[in-house]
Amino acid sequence: MQQLLAERRVAVLVPGGVKEVLKMEHGSEVAYLSTRKGFVRIAVQCGAPIVPVWAFGQTRAYSWVRPGPPLFPSWLVARISRMFGAVPIYMFGAYGTSMPHRERITVVVGRPIPVQQMDDPPEEVVSELLHKFMDDLQALYDKHRGQYGTGEELHIL
Image 1 (spheres, rainbow, N blue to C red):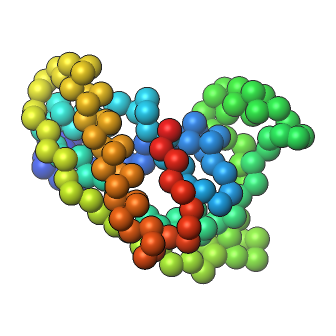
Image 2 (tube, one colour):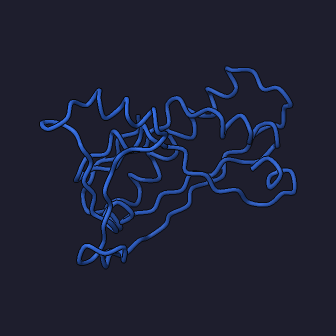
């Protein structure tokens, strides 16, 4: 990612990870960002703007089943997920296959958040930019959800 940004190319990152998958709920959208400062730090080190992007319809492209209550306690699923670096989740598309459900996916792109290049950015700068990114992502979602969404709330954690 650093090399791409140093070459002034585009790097795309989905920062949610295991914690985001553990927080997923049917009928809502989740973005786990509150502790994901690494992508912001790299953007500052490279002087690359941070751009909020959302894909409406992405969570309906595949169905999913994840172990959890009442069969398995949440703490056990979280521990197994951390141990293996992946959540035990079964995802399937149309007719139980790997082909996605017929779902329109619309990608909306927000305004770039400019950053000042710093080799060793202070924690306050990184935190401030992350909060700005989270606020801008929520605003982008709210602006377009009436047109492209199906009523789901976005929960930024």
